[in-house]
Amino acid sequence: MDPRSEVLLRQRELFAGRVLLAGPPADDLLGQLPEALTWNWHAGHQQRLQARFAGRNSYGTEVPEIEFDHAVLFLPKSRELTEYLLNALAARLHGGPLYLVGEKRAGIERAAKQLAAFGQPRKLDNARHCQLWQVQVNQAPKAPDLQALAQPFSLDLADGPLQVISLPGVFSHGRLDRGSALLLEHLDDIPQGRLLDFGCGAGIIGAVLKRRYPHSEVVMLDVDAFAVQSSRMTLVANGLDAEVISGDGIDAAPGQLAAIISNPPFHQGVHTHYQASETLIERAAQHLSPGGEMRLVANAFLRYPPLIEAHLGHCQTLANTDGFRIYRARRG
Image (cartoon, rainbow, N blue to C red; front, side):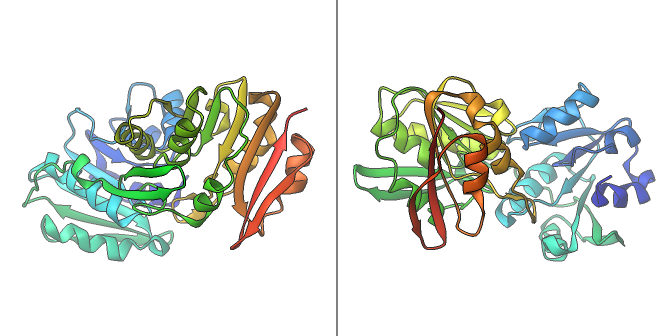
């Protein structure tokens, strides 16, 4: 059981009735709170919860249109996303209680200050290296407009400017990260055919691929609903057409790919995880056509070449600069 869920269950009596759990982990909390419902934006958590507790889970970037009496937000990593989620939930409560739970090292005490916009916050519990806060929503805000919170920015690329639309919580919100910047410099000679942008984020790589290889089908995949929405908005802003899908890892990707191009995700919450990128490397060959190519950027300290060669083939380093490397390998 996730420690944040354990803290909630220490105050189980508060969460009777129709409580909406926003961004919960995929553990047994729903089994302990039989009337609880969930709202998730992580496709993997949604999939696992739906498999165990069918009909009690919603997925997306907007508060689901269901009835609930109180809500619990599991603190996300991004401060901007936290603000959006708190306002979206508080707008639906109008006098009801709103709870915030999170790890101390994730900044729960700082985030709890954001509750003051709705009423007088109070700390209810402090255990398992987590804290639980509550506020009675006496000052309900207007429902936030997610589109208005999008942060657009422009990239001046060799083949022309690219308009990027970034939503709160999306990786490298409002800017181009160093890894993607390096990968953008090494997108020449991509095989023609169906191309996958794995971990698409705000859609920068996928949009560039579609513009540079207009006759190729481009598929963009991310585990996060806000990233999926950002990618779709980026495509629209540039007059491009590609398929954008939600899914948990490479297993959600289609087959018969000519190439997989990725700045793979390394973070989940406050913790650093490499499972998604390692699973990508281990299973890429299952999704690539013969002769298909995987090209990715990774931190230089990660020992990916032996893993790539064990599962795909000879690993070529195309670039090694600024703490990042670009790797390329082809399926035989």
